[in-house]
Length: 133
Image 1 (cartoon, rainbow, N blue to C red):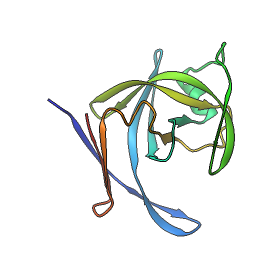
Image 2: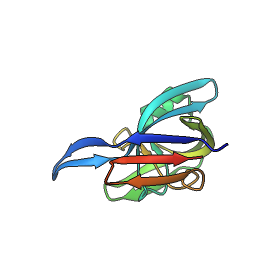
Image 3: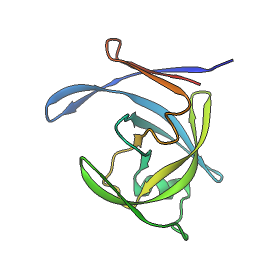
Image 4: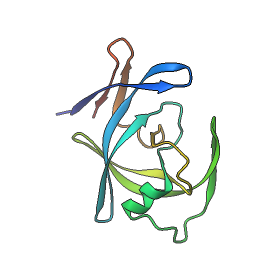
């Protein structure tokens, strides 16, 4: 049986006024560590992005990973790709995340490795996002 999780959008004050943002509660797992985070669902982001301190708290270490540079509307940031477990309600995924080497990045749930499963629906009128797994 497929699982479903529905999240209400959050009203956020931005420089252009209030906007409704799709935010979901995600439990991240790496090794024996787990963190619960509110993540913005960003259909324009290629990768799921975590700030540096969040990755440290999750137990990420630099090791031998190859550094890459992500660029976007807010500029760019160096990152390392890491594997992590993501739990959205009862939906469980093991995916790559971009661990930024700075804390000056947002916490984003991006398309790569996430939007292929589950199905994600945005409902602007009802101001909610639905995950069907």
